[in-house]
Amino acid sequence: PPNMAFPRSILRRIGYLDEHPSLRLAGEDNDWAYRALRAGVPIVYEPSSVVAHVAWQPASALPSIYRRYARGQGAFYGKHLRRGDLFIARRLARDLLRAGWLALRASGSRNPELRAMAHGEVGLLPGLLAGLRNPGDAVRVRPEGVVHR
Image 1: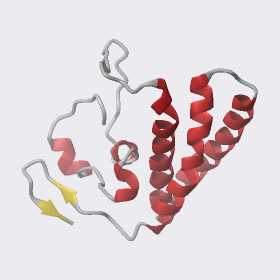
Image 2: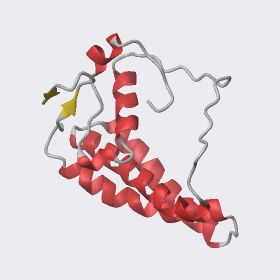
Image 3: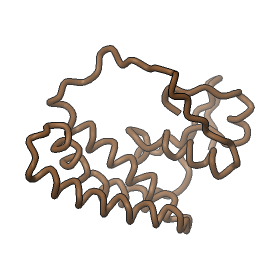
């Protein structure tokens, strides 16, 4: 969903972003893309497209950014685990193993981005718990401003 284009008819097929607070900061795009794939909508990677983030964050902000991303990813996993999605259970297990491996690698590294990524992974478990507690679909806002459940 970030930096992508699609026909408006896709929204009728998949729905809008789930704006539940547990997903809102970093997981709503992964959730939307996963629902698109589950609905049979292909996602095509276009490597010739270039997006430049002109005013990106300073290196000192990376740990909190990666933590927010991990929390959103955990909430995404929790939402779909709550619905019994075994594919997501396998993805979560892979990411938990990856988080441990990142922490181990970062402990002996001077690479600030690797250390920030490893530090950020601590957000995965709180996000997972938030996603598991999510009582249901959140209120979504349509592009024309109509609020519905």
